[in-house]
Amino acid sequence: MTDTTTTGTATTVADENVSVAGVPTGLFIGGAWRAASGGATFPVRDPSTGEVLAEVADATPEDGMAALDAAVAAQDAWAATAPRERSDLLRRAFDLVRAHEDDLAALMTLEMGKPLAEARGEVVYGGEFLRWFSEEAVRIGGDYRTNPEGTGRAIVLKRPVGPVYAITPWNFPLAMATRKIGPALAAGCTVVVKPAELTPLTTLFLVELFRRAGLPDGVLNVVPSLDAKGLSEPIIADRRLRKLTFTGSTPVGSALLKQAADNVLKTSMELGGNAPLLVFDDADLDTAVTAAMLAKFRNVGEACTAANRFFVQEGIADAFTAALTAKVDALRIGRGSEEDTTLGPLIDDRAVDKAARLVDDAVSRGARLVTGGRRVDRPGTYYAPTVLDDVQPGSDILTTEIFGPVVSITRFATEEEGIRLANDTEFGLIAYAYTSDFARGQRLAERLETGMLGLNTGVVSNAAFPFGGVKSSGLGREGAHEGIEEYLESVYVLTPDPFAA
Ligand code: ADP
Image (cartoon, rainbow, N blue to C red; front, side, top):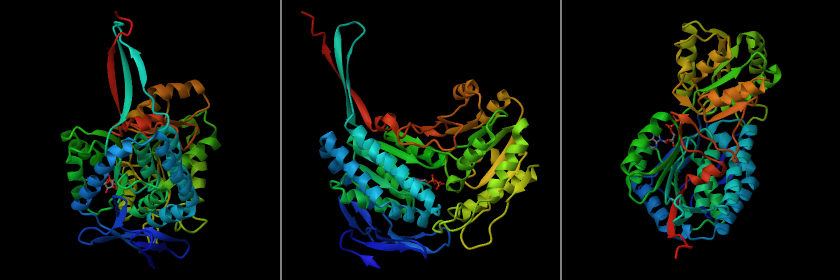
């Protein structure tokens, strides 16, 4: 069924369990939905069946340039709007996101595979970036300073950096878009978004909600494309662009940083992780197991924040592994749209092959397979939840972001050894630690090489806190007050000492 009255080309996206009407399938440029120049489209598939859900316009490099033109044309007027106006737009968009919780959750489940309950959680989490930055929009300050010599006064003011290009991944289709769009719009920047080609429908629906919220033409533009590189290169090379924000893999982020260097762009990079999860002998076992399940299996492990390497102290290791394995065996594999599913499919065949390869490599190097370790014999791209114990040094799983439902456990003896193992990685996005010793928690906070630490908890993400990594995990922070600074420049105006004769 197609509906062309409000959105250009829109369609109904559905499976046997859920259905969403009015999902746009075009490009959104300069305030209007349109087809790709040349009319090409690409299919979006349901990873739980492999079936095509919708055909989406496939933006060409010319379309990408048209989107940048629209963002550039709208930039000055948007920067000049009253903060309250930008705030109100974001607040209306937040209200619409919450009013469409069921639609957005169903769309994410359909195109990405996560269970509906988790998708609903992402609508709440992703929506919060719009509410938070609607509140930040009216709190962009400056300050007044005296130079050390006492001979001058500076007024420091904040200005929007200018047009932004945002590239988002497929694993959190809503939240990864709102955590970039929210602060950019709040700061007074216009935006071109390229959603992941595997999951463009959620972003398209989100932008339609912005349109209904009263989005001025050109302020937010969306260009899904199968040709991410061909579309992005000319945009990033264009002198009118001022900011590149990316969430995705470290190799792509690093390649984008090289391109951004030619244009000296301000950049924010949220890249890969290899999160350690430390369980100490003095941890509360129930807390540690419950939190570790979340840290590992939320989103089928397809999160840059997913616990990748479990390090468990010897005194608690047997009890922890047994209790965790019992919970892992209780996970219900199924399509995300079935209400009792707690573990959905992986995003595609490549993801399943990767999990299988890492498990086979670890076992061949001496790890003990406690449970799982196999593909699931049903349509769609599933891998059984897996626990490996006694994973040996040199196993690929210790240096690779798994992005799948596999627990890799290595035992350690002392706090010193645990910290050394945890830091033995090029990445530094997040760490998890379970201990009832507060001073140990503080030592970990000061010594773990990480941008975030979940202490006795399994999920840290919150729009009010500065999300981001150190080392190869990226540059910049998303969320919190820091999140809007990424879209602002400081300008200072120096004046003479007003008391000088
Ligand atoms: P993943 O491996 O998790 O899919 P990627 O880093 O490949 O992560 O993809 C994240 C986002 O980056 C997606 O929107 C994808 O289309 C985009 N992307 C991938 N390669 C490039 C590239 N060379 N230039 C610009 N964007 C890219």
